[in-house]
Length: 218
Image (tube, rainbow, N blue to C red):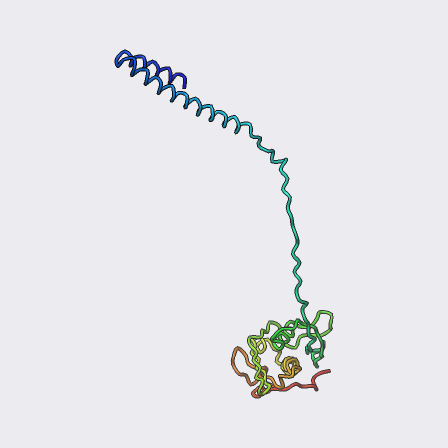
């Protein structure tokens, strides 16, 4: 900056010889004021730079962040359970055996109970499933006016069933007896893949709805 103002002053002196002393004095006075303002601004900028350089940046290792954590406790309602009756075949596949199991209480208890039946008996119960493995419940519809339950199963109920009449009876009443435990159901109508069936293996008559059969239970 000093070099710039030296050049300016030199130009003033040259101007003096051309325009006269009075004009040169005025110009020199104005230049001095500008020079003083520039010097003041320069000193201010220098002071700010020095202050910024003097700011200490904290070491990241010295920074401590205090976290406040309050665990939110979620208290859910206890799951209500209902004891239902399930009918499985004995080890010799001659009769049905009634067992009881607790399952969660839901809106569609009949559906939930049949689906539990299709899961089969407990491994250490000594019982076997009367309904062929792989059978799926496709739909269930209860008609309260006649207390009739229409159940629709997959093809496995018929295709995977043993050809003996006893196996057919066990499968039918394993389902019917399980469903008829509910007060809203007195008879069961069977369907396969949405179609009405008259029999499963050829011996039982399913052209009409069936009711529970206590005689087949041991």
